[in-house]
Structure formats: C-alpha cells, structure tokens
Length: 392
Image 1 (cartoon, rainbow, N blue to C red):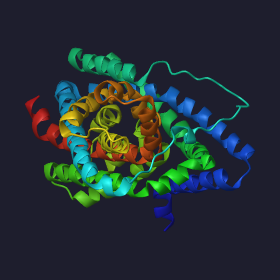
Image 2 (image 1 turned 180 degrees about the vertical axis):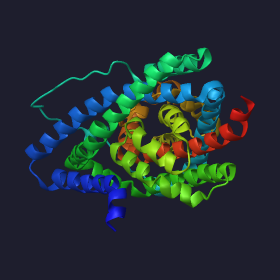
Image 3 (image 1 turned 90 degrees about the horizontal axis):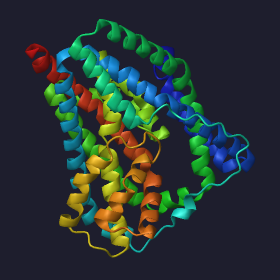
C-alpha cells in the first residue's frame, strides 16, 4: 500500500492541490485568494522561463541520439499530428452540428464575467530567453546538424545540458507544480462566474469531453495495433499526464510527466525526449475538437451560417495555426483569433463568447492533447524500430 502511494504521490498531490485551490477561492477571504493567485502567477512566469530550456535540452538530445532517422521521425510525427487533428476537428463539427441545437437553446455568455482584477503586491518579471517556436526550430537545427556531422563533442555538450535541465525539472519544476495548481484553481473558483458557466453549459462540455475520449480511444487503438500492445494498459499508464495537464492547462509544462508516462508504455528515452516536447506544440487534437465545437456553438447562438463548406477550410488552417501556439493556459484560442476573424467573420462580441467558452473547458482540451501525444510516441517507437533503424 505504501509503495503504491509513493508511486502515485505526484498524482495525489495534484488532486489535493485542486481541492485546496477550490476551497481557498470559495471559502477564504479574497486577500488569501489574491496571495495564492500572485504566487501562481509568479510560478507561471518561472515555468515559462524554463519551458524553452526544456525544449532545447530534451529535443536536441533526443534528435542527436536518433542519428540518421531523425528527419524521417520528424516527418512521421508531423503527419500523425496533423492527421489526428483534422480527423478530430471534422468529427467535432458533425457531432456539434447535430447535438448542440437541442442543448444550447438561447443561452449566451459575457466574456467579461471571467475577468479577475487585483493590485499585485509584487511583480517579478522573468522573461524567457526565447519563445517556444524559436526553441523548437533551434532545437531541430542543432539536433539534426549534430546527427548529420556526427559531432561527438557537441552531442556530449548538449547531453550534459540535457542532464542539467532534467535536474532542474526534477528539483524545481515538479515540486512547484502542485503549488502553481493551488493558485490556478483559487483564481478560477474566486471568479464565481466560471462555476455558473460550467453549470449552464455542462451538457455542451460533456459532449466535448466525450469526443475527447472517443479520439483518445481511436488514437490509442491505432497505437496498440501498430505496437501490438494492449490499448487499455497504454491508456492506464498515461492517466498521470492527463490529470496533471487538466490542472495546469499547459501542454508544454507537463513535458516531464509525459515523458515518464511514455517510458512506462515502453517508449525508449531517446524517442520520448524527441517526440513528447515536439508534440507538445504540434499535436493539439483536443484543442482542435474543443475549438471547432465552440465555433459551431457561437455560430448557432448568433444565427450564422454553419455549413461544412465554410467550416472545413477553417479546420484545415486551424491545424497549422495552432502549431507552436504559446505553451500557456488558453494559448491556442488567442493564437487563432485572426483566423476566426478572417475565415469565419467573427465579430468582437463573438470572439468574446469564444474566449469565454474556451476558458471554461481549456483544461480538458489540453489534457486530451497531452494524452494523445503518448499515442504518437508509441507509434513512432514501433515504426523507428521496425523500419528506420534497420534502414540506417
């Protein structure tokens, strides 16, 4: 029993952090909530500073270890990610169009209900050295370059940098995640309005979550067939990553947990170090499903056209625009605002409704993204062992 508790200690801490955060936001004075919110905001800045370093440290080490197959695996990961996103979004469109009319009725929401304003007692700015997109591209260039020129000196240098980053993750990032989660849920519950929206739109959100579950079953069924493993064992091993990403609402911040879960599913360290940081920015199937469903809901509430011919081009662009969206809570929705305006003609009010809906369910989309990353890692591991390594 004690060994099982130790094995799932992080998961237990995260669940307790969620409960504590909700209690602080609902029952404690606002001054207490504000304190934890400010701590959480500071920790978010610290995590944002570490994320590009994690991407470079893990991706470069992973790519350079793959030697001649790195380019092929990159292409495979891109194809799988985009394919899963399009399939998920198209399915979301048809399900939403058929089920939402009976669920939405004439309800509407105000994005201003989600604002939480306070005067910070301290404000420490920790700007990252670069954004996530730059880090990914730089990691590709360095990693593939090392594997092509076969530089042992550079490989050893970045392996040591990986060890430093990994140590920082283990000793700094993982311990502060539960504290960060307390502040996140104190902030959400203190607003009050989000609870009302979650209640009023619970049926809509339930449909979206069901679609997340279906796409995850589909992805892991494909992974199980390719890898010849048990689909339910694969899903069981990624539960910690799902819960953690649900709480943090950030795909990138959960990279260390995703890698650990992938390794529990039999993915080698070199593949996990390469695929999971990469997929955290290019594979966003859960977010694609949520955003497509929200688009249909907003269009319905505004009596606008919802034809497939109008929405499908948006879906195709959505899978591209979301790539390397900021690795922060609700980053994807802000990344696609220009697309909503140019492709679907969203007004400022419709965008406000879109943001509000997305905030209410962003954690579930992120959790689906992160959990789905593991299926791509399993598929990539099998394909690499069976075809690419033999070819090289």
